[in-house]
Every structure is written in C-alpha cells, then in structure tokens.
Image (cartoon, rainbow, N blue to C red; front, top):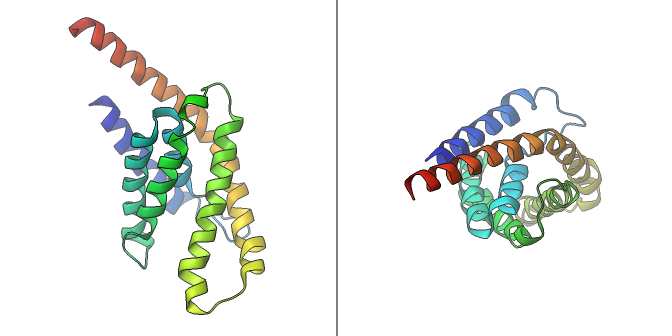
Length: 172
C-alpha cells in the first residue's frame, strides 16, 4: 500500500514539476521529461512489469494533457519502462551511470518516435534540425535533472523496502 501511495504521489509531483515549474525555465525551448526519467529508473529498480505499469500510468497522464493521439505516449512510455526492466539484474542503486545512460538513450528514442509519428507523417522532413535543436538538448536536460531526482527516488525506495521487510517479518 505504501508503495502505491509513493508511486501516485511521485508521478503527480513529477508531472507538476515538469509542467508548471520546469516549463517556465526551459533551456533552448525544451523541458526535461521527468516522467520518462522516473519510469526508466523505476523499471531499473523493480523490473520489467513494474516499469511497464509505471510507464503506462505516466504515459496516460501525458496523453490526457499533451497528446494529440490518445495512447501514443502511453505505448512508448510503457515500452521504455519494460525495456529498462531488462537491465534490472545489472542495476545497483549506488551506480548512477546505467540509469543516466538509459534515461539519455530512451529520451532520444522517444524524440525519434515523436518525430516519426507526429512530424514525419505530416510531411515535415527536418530531422537534422529537430535532432540538433530539440532531441539532443531535451535528452541532455532530462539526464542532468535525473542526476537530482535519482538519489531521492532511490532513498525513498530503500525506505519503503525496509518498511516492507519489517512488516513481512512482523506479520510473516
């Protein structure tokens, strides 16, 4: 129950932070994708299934508020959460390189998906411009902001796991 509360509150807070605060201080007209960073990190921490469900919830939230096609972000965020879960066995909470690399790569892949499905099919063929001016800055900005939120997420997850272990021993 505590984990579900944590997930709900974290997703809402990151969504508000992304849309209200960070959109005001955008760098090079891009804002970081905190929900993508969260579902990536959560997939790494908890595995494929948890990453997939977290990505689905984050994606639906993005679809409802920003999407022009319902299910677009949900599908890709779910896919990226699941993809992150494949690296769960290689994940160590103290090692920050893998999560940051995953966030960077998945943000670039999300940018490619947005370009292909939302721009290319409309006849806009400026991939070089979009890649250099939108995708790269967003991926870098998301990765840098992930440096700040990743330790907080890890710490809270560790506290929840300790609480769950104590509870299992107490009632088990």
